[in-house]
Image (tube, rainbow, N blue to C red; front, side):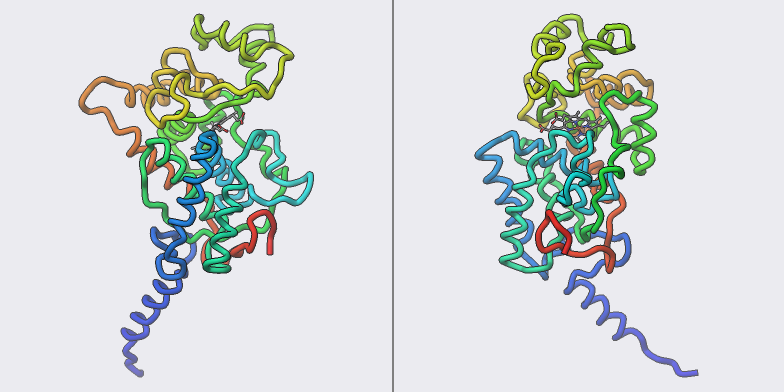
Length: 327
Ligand code: HEM
């Protein structure tokens, strides 16, 4: 039997792997573009920064975009595709999604610098990170190397978490994505530390909670008349309310205090306080002991996990030339 020395081959493969930014199945890594498109992350950061400096509502939109991309067919940029009425992005749960132009703009700049290299799915993940950092949230390393999906179908987005879901349903929808109760609280409650909601998502909570013309009892009695005044029955569903009352532009733990005190705007945020487990997680971030975990650090870890859901790597999918259509 020949005794081949495979060491040089293995070393060469490792170098090729690192140089050309190839990922093995399912694996992402921080700095994936460091050789193939060294300025990728700074190009994206600049695009996000410029957009947010013009309109600070863009930051929460970019954060929300990642969640909606990852929960349908994994983080594969499918939310960006436009293929008519049946596009994934037209699903009811995706209503109000915005910030697409920032992703398209970053992609155009990346294509001019290093064509065919940076995936739209990675741009979404990096832009969400940059948006969080720009609102005083944590800055964390984003593992990259995602490839773009080729499918967009409205029906695949039918099962997104809904504002009016029970806590049991929210938990099971997160668990299906490999996310724990802790991550449900951090990402959905915590993610709503910035941004706004349209009145469109309020009627059941305010006017027909159990089907008898009642309101969600979790709403603080001082807050209920304010919410009703802002979102009257049969009023303009496009009026927008801050999700984290009095702190909508700053990434902080204020949202958890609001949820605990009955000032959650979204029903799904209020539900996090209905359940013993999720309540305990939420309370841990607003506790007053020295052992209080860091919301920002834990949010960053949860974001990396969100960004890993069902990713396409290696030879799966493609690197789109433009983000709103397949190659
Ligand atoms: C239980 C799961 C969730 C539900 C039911 C939910 C629901 C909603 C709804 C109804 C809105 C208002 C949309 C609009 O009117 O434009 C919203 C906004 C938002 N969501 Fe969630 N969400 C969930 C989880 C998440 C997660 C995991 C994140 C990110 C980590 C997130 C980030 C955001 C942000 C930043 C906004 C504000 C968007 C803006 O200002 O345009 N959400 N969410």
